Length: 374
Image (cartoon, rainbow, N blue to C red; front, side):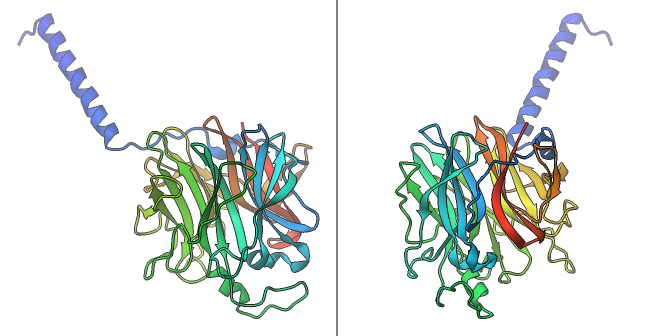
């Protein structure tokens, strides 16, 4: 059968239009995000004299934002060294520090979220801050806890159940202020409560929020567990129309489940969530190394909707083995609470809580370190 050139061109045009239509339909139904350069390959040598440290305090959990004053403001955890490291669960408070440069060093300014009374859900402890700016207001996410036993003092023996009782009361709070320097207004009730009979029936903690472009909604990743402080620790996802809005779970179950019947410690924690303008990204700590291959190393995952996640083709996001900008290399006892400073939509610095010591959790000092990114 002979086909004229005119008919051939019409047919080709129709096929082209059909292919474009099919492509558009596929896109609108959701696409698999295209990965950029592996996250771990973006890490530059860590800044030896940067970050934040206080000689008489254990320091933990940095979150940084550039303020309206042009300075970089860090919110971090501290508690007295003479109480011992485990007193983070009974004595931590979120403090505020500043620097002219994102890498620091940061200088202590004040206590942002101090103790306020046993009757409040966050009355005796505030910990693990995450700072964002939404429209013209700063929001400081954190977890707080309270407890019904005497506040432990330096040198005192803890009763065997003290840690567990304080741990089980962890709840997410959201403070807000029009000024990065405060004062901070704090809620009387948690932002998200545990759900009885569900995987997150014990606690809500370690919040990591991200503002979704175009919609302005807040996607929030949080940590919880079903069996007190034992593995597995799991991550959930919720969403609200604004930072102080009602948070609704987007998934009835956890967003990751790496566990097997004989390997309940295949779990993650310390999520940091962001939206890169096209899709969500998440880095988190592999607690026991069964996923990324390094105990305490980092994992990178991506998602187009914040609910369905896939691990990156190069899973590992960071390592406890650190190359410093003076040429030295160390293997840190811990690399915790990863936080990314996002500037103009791009991660520019990775902050993490770390310490010197012979083994994990056996520290002589701790501080918040910082790694520039390519």
